[in-house]
Structure formats: C-alpha cells, structure tokens
Image 1: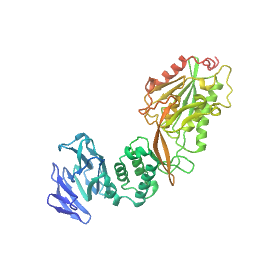
Image 2: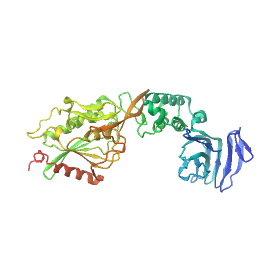
Image 3: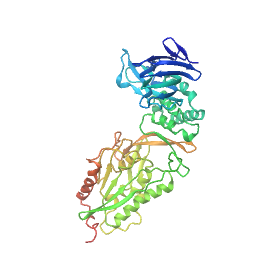
Image 4: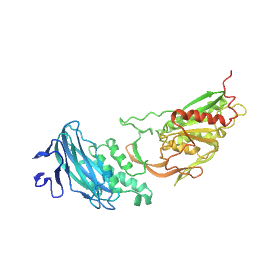
Length: 461
C-alpha cells in the first residue's frame, strides 16, 4: 500500500520518492489505485540512486501510471549519471519517450547503460507542463535485477519465450563472445523493458525479441517471422512480395551497357530464389545477344536478405572459383556449371561475361547481403566501385528456428573478399559520386575500358 510519508511519497523502505521541481507539486492523494499527484508547472519524482560499478552494466526504472493534463507537456522517465566526485555527467543523461496524456494506466520502463566513470545512476519521473499523475508503482534497480523488477508486467508466455531466446542464442554464439563480449544483464533488461504492454501471443512478441537481438550490439542480429513458403511476413502476417531484379540496356554515343538493378531478396523460398537468379541471367543473355559486354550493377537499393540468389544469378560475371568467404566459415565458390550462361547466342567476338567490365554502384542503403554481392566483385579484374560508402553490415547471420514461424538471425562471422579483406565500416567506392552523378561516372568508365563489342551494341543507323 502506498502512503504519504515525511520527505515525500513511499511504497516501502526501498521505494522512497522525493517531490522536487521549480513548480510546487501539490495535492498528493492516496487511494487504492495509487498516489495522485498534481503538477501545476514542472518537477520530478526522484527515486533513490542506483549504484553501478563493474560488472554492473546499467540500471532499469519501472513505472505504472496514468497521465492527464496539458497535451503540450511531457511526462517521462529519466536517468542522470553521477561520477565518483558526485558531479552530474550531462552528456550521459537518458530520457524515455513522453507518455500519452490520456488517463490510461500503463507500464513503462527505461534502461540506461552505465557510462564510463559513473558511480551511480539517478532515476526520476520528470514532468513538464500541467499534469496530473496517478502513480501505482515507481521503482528502479540494477540491470541484473530487471526480471524481478518487471516480471509482474510481462505476460507469462512472453517471459518464457524471452528465456528460450536467450538460451538458444547463448548456445549458438561462439563461446568466447558469449563469455566476454556480451553484457547479458543489460541485454535482458532491454528485452524485458520492450516486452511491457505486449500481448501473450508469439506474433505479438516480435518487438521484445528484436530488442533482445539488437541489444547484442553487433548491429546486425535480428528476428523476423517467415511464412510456410519461406517469405518474410509483414506486420499483418502476410508474406512480403519479392521484387525482381531489373535489367535494361542503356545506349549512348554509339555504345551500350547493361544496367542491372538488384532489390533486397526478402525470401528463403526456393521458387523466389530461382526467379530472382533467373531474372539476372535473363538480363545477361539479352545483353550478350545484343552484343553488349559491359555492366552497371546497381546495388544502392539492395538492403539485405538472402545473398545466394544474387550470387547465383551473377555467377557468369563472377566466373568460376572462390569469390569471397565467411570468417570464420566456408568460402563462396562458383562452380564451372554455375558460371556458364546457358541459352545465349553471342555475336562473334563477344567475350564470355566473366571478361566484361563491371561498374558496381553502392551507397548507404547497400547492406548485409547487398554488401555480400558487392564483396564478390571486390578483387575481380575489370571491376570498379562508384557511389558512396556502404552501410557496414558485411557480416553473416546464422538462423535459429524458434518454431511457429519465428526465426532469429544471429551474427556469427564476417564477410571477406577473395583476397581476404574484411569491411567492418563498409565498402568504400573507388570513385565517390552522389546519386545524380554516379551513373554518368560509371558509364564513362565503362566506355573508357574500350569493350570490344561496344560498337556492335549500337542500334543500326
């Protein structure tokens, strides 16, 4: 039972709340549904500080409350950090989102990572504007105690799922990283905080599962639902339609190049993979029949997904052999049969696609498997990169099937090119250019390569 006590509001000996702020907080009333506090201007309900020291990774604050008042105001949880000398670290402040002023009681949590040099984290519920709060719970704890702090507000099936996710991830993660590279209490705290207010069904749990995977800190791990056909599902449960690669022949000044635009490959379905690779090969066959032997490979919109259909379709350009690898992990090998472009009738003198010059367009949206495709051309003779630095997610994810369509993607290795080079910050173009200038720059370079079939590719006059 909450009660009014000297020095502020308190629920028990550990949950003392102190009222403070430039505007006087007044009209504190106690009822069976919590403490009602009127805030006429601004102020804060401050909790006792949470002492944090290694190996404590941070702290979590929890509130269950309703807010009514000025729509222009804001009520939110906050953490301030204090150093060993008792001084605030302003740059380390962490603010939660403003809560809706709709009078609905809801749970909310905020997680703060311990910044370097911090002795304690000070949680508070900060109010700006004119608001009335109905507070049923307000407390904080170190991140290692997040489960106990938040358990009452997380549906039991979701709690069990998060436990299973942690067990499966820790079992699949390389032992050294699992032992020393992850702050598991902080990861757990972020997942449980994201679970507040979610329903008990697995389909409703995705935000919390994604919060867990994101908190691993590698920038690439994640989670998704996949339908029985192998397509990733949208929020409504429908399989996402898979866009097809686009191929067109660009003619200018008596020469021609093939432009191949590759979209993300958001499917694990065999039929979608075959269609994706087939569209690329169809474009290559069309170019070869037309006497075109130069390619602009546009990966600026390739944000990720399944890398293998793209490599399969582009195999005739890449040629047989090793074109990249996972570290740790196996190499990416193009076989002799895979590298053949079956069904093309090339004019005399047109070389095989593996000898064609390729201008690769990349940018900040080129990510994950889009970067894998780009890496396959790194170190290939007759290839040059144009555009802007890629996203920097050139890592490989292992898939963990959680059942009922839920799949985890856990980063387990990095991608390297055929010369063993990794790209932790993304691929840097050989020639920087913005979106308006990148295609002219690429086609100009291709013309400068003096492709032997460029004249044949021009339409008859």
